[in-house]
Image 1: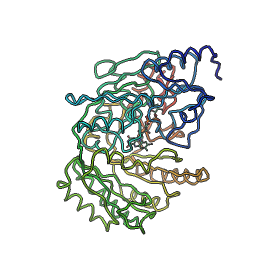
Image 2: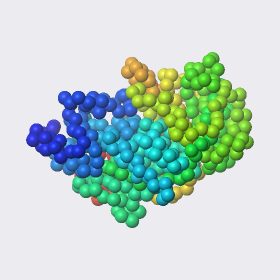
Image 3: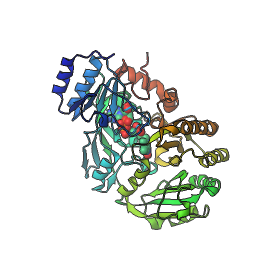
Image 4: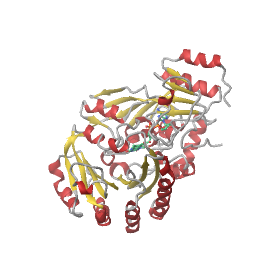
Length: 462
Ligand SMILES: Cc1cc2nc3c(=O)[nH]c(=O)nc-3n(C[C@H](O)[C@H](O)[C@H](O)COP(=O)(O)OP(=O)(O)OC[C@H]3O[C@@H](n4cnc5c(N)ncnc54)[C@H](O)[C@@H]3O)c2cc1C
C-alpha cells in the first residue's frame, strides 16, 4: 500500500527538472500507454525525467518509500515491464539525445532514444550500429537484452558494439561502466536487461553503413512455403555474412507489387538485407527467386534508414499483442512442417511467424563474453500474435501457445529475453542459461534488495 505523504511528493516534484505525473494529471493516461495495448497499468507516479539528476531523484524516492519501480525506455517490451501498478515509473521518453563523433565512430545515446533517433543521427555520417527492425523500438531495452537486426551477421549484436554506459544503481549512485571500470556490471548489462539499474547514456561503436543498402522482399504463396523454407534452410548454411535473409509467414499486406488477388492471402516472404551493392547479390537473389514461383518482389537499392522503417506500418503501437519465442540452432524438416502448418491457420489477419537469422558475427563471441549467451542460435523464431478486438484474446493466445508447444521439440530450449511475455518469468533460466549464476551474483552486489524487479527478473544470489 502507498503511504507516501503529500509533502514527500511535493519535494520530489520540486526537485525535478522534468515532470511528475499522477493519476489526476493531464497527460497521465498518454504517459501510461505503451506499444502493447494488452497492458493496462496504473502507476501512482510517473517521473518523466529530463536527465540523470531526475533519474537519481526518482530511484532514491522509490527505494526510500518502498515503491515498486518500473523503467520505461521506448515502451516496446511485450511483457509491459515499462509500467507497474501503484508504484513509480521512471519514464525516459524525453531523454532522446544522440551525439555522434564521426571521426572516432562513436555515438552517445540517451536512455530514452529510439532506433529511429539513433539511425537518423548516425546516418548523417553514413554510420550505424546493429539495432532492431522497427524504428520506434527503444535503444535501451533492446540493447540491454542483446539486440539483433539486419546488421548483426556482419557486426554482431547491439551489446557487442556497446563500449560504455552511465547507469544509476539502486543505491542512488551514477556509475560509468566499461571494460575496465566496474567490468562485472558492464558485462551484466550486455544482456541482463534492466535488472542492474537505469542506464542514462550508452556509448556505441559505429560502422560505415550505406547510406544506400540493398534490401527488399521476395514473396511466395503459402502453398509453396514448405519447399521455400526447406531451400532457404539449405541456403543459410552457405550464406555469406553480408547477406541476411529472414523468413516471414503471414497474410500478405496490400503491397503494390503483389497482385490484388494475393492481398490478404497466406504467404511466405523472404526479407533480404545486405550492405553490398545489388550487382554483387545477383546470384544469391536468383537462387532465392528460384525457390518457387514468386507472387512478386520488391528489391533494390534504398536508404538504410528507409529499410529500418520498412516494417513500421505492420508494427504500429496500439494493437493487442502476444508473443511466444524459441531459438533454433538448426531447422529440421519437422520444424518446417510445424511452422508451415500453423502459418496456414493464423487466428487473426495481423498475426505472423518470423524466423530471424543470426549466425555470422552474432555467433562469433563466446557464450560468456556478454550476459547475452545465445551465440549458437541460428534462428530466433517469434510467434507474433497480433489483433485489435479484445474478443479475439482467447483464440489468439491459445493459437500462439499451441504452436509454441508443437514446435518446442525442435527448438534449442533457449530464448531471447526481449521476446518473453509477462507470463513467462520461469523462462529466465532459459534466457540466461550458463550465465544466470554470475548474473545473480552481480545482482546481489549492485541490487541486493531487488529494487529493479519489474522485468524478466534475475534474483540476487543469496
Ligand atoms: C515491434 C517490435 C519490434 C522488435 N524488433 C526487435 C528486433 O528487431 N531486435 C531485437 O533485438 N528486439 C526487438 N524487439 C524486442 C525489443 O528488443 C524489446 O521489446 C525491448 O525491451 C524494447 O525496449 P524498449 O526500451 O522499447 O522497451 P521498454 O518497454 O521501455 O523497456 C523494456 C525494459 O527494459 C528496461 N529498460 C528500458 N530502458 C532502460 C534504461 N534506460 N535503463 C535500464 N533499463 C531500461 C526495463 O527493464 C524495461 O522494463 C522488438 C519489439 C517490438 C515491440
